[in-house]
Amino acid sequence: MTEAAQLRALLKAPGMIVAPGAYDGLTAKLVEQAGFPAVYMTGAGTAAAAGYPDFGLLTLTEMAENAGRLARSVGIPVIADADTGYGNELNAYRTVQEYERRGVAGIHIEDQVSPKRCGHLDRKEIVATEDWLAKLRAACAARRSPDFLVIARTDARAVAGFEEAVSRANAALAAGADMAFLEAPETLEEVAAVPRLVRGPCLLNVVHKGKTPALDLREAAGMGYKVAIVPGLLFKAAIAACDAALAALARTHRHPEGPTDMTVREAFDRVGAATWDARRTAFREV
Image 1 (cartoon, rainbow, N blue to C red):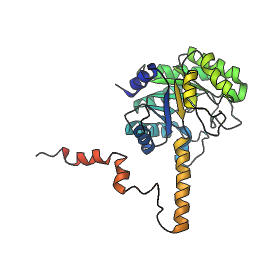
Image 2 (image 1 turned 30 degrees about the horizontal axis):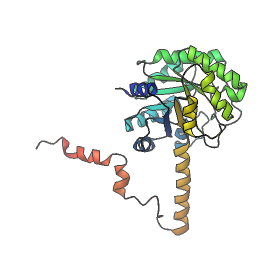
Image 3 (image 1 turned 135 degrees about the vertical axis):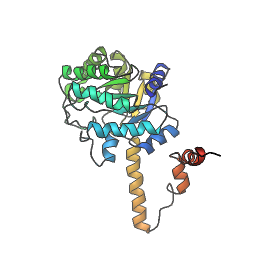
Image 4 (image 1 turned 30 degrees about the vertical axis):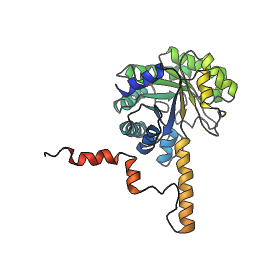
């Protein structure tokens, strides 16, 4: 079963998929080892890992290559950020080709202008609805497997209001998108209204201290969402943990105790050392 087929099977099952955000092979493995059924390649985390803010500064090639590293590292489906599709409908067509051939199970393409901004920042701008729909139609036409998931993300809530965002989400589903991602609803009432008003499966973006109010993910499942992504969890945790470890090193002039106490071997085992050790002798004749 391909990764995309795995994702489709998960979507057909009852309940909601929770996909924490990862930004490299290590964090993708940690998501899988924690027992989650899917991993989300966060664009914000991918940009941060490259030393940039989430301002649309990374290219298609950089994003697709990182998505491929995540997909190669795990056996669970990877859903990936594909920003605006990196241009017009021709670029969106190629975007699907590049992500799909790297083993990604699905992507989302948004209706912001390029270069985009993080969906939870102010001063976003959106393109005309038809321009976005053309990209989504191209994305759907480009996939080799019908299982590959095309998710339509609209950032219209912050620019043109909630009703326009719902209208765009429904137009995207009518144009062939498999799922709607209405970015940054601003109240719990709006969060609850999205699955009622959007005529198809919905994705919720859970951004701590972002535009969307905090809620228990079990509440989101009860509202009818099929996927919840938690993009900032690990890359912000990494920033905080690294800050603390570096401060302790500067203060004490010794390697800090605590969370970093794992042995070298224990650290390597989290990324498959035992499997690779077995391969050292597996191919030699006895």
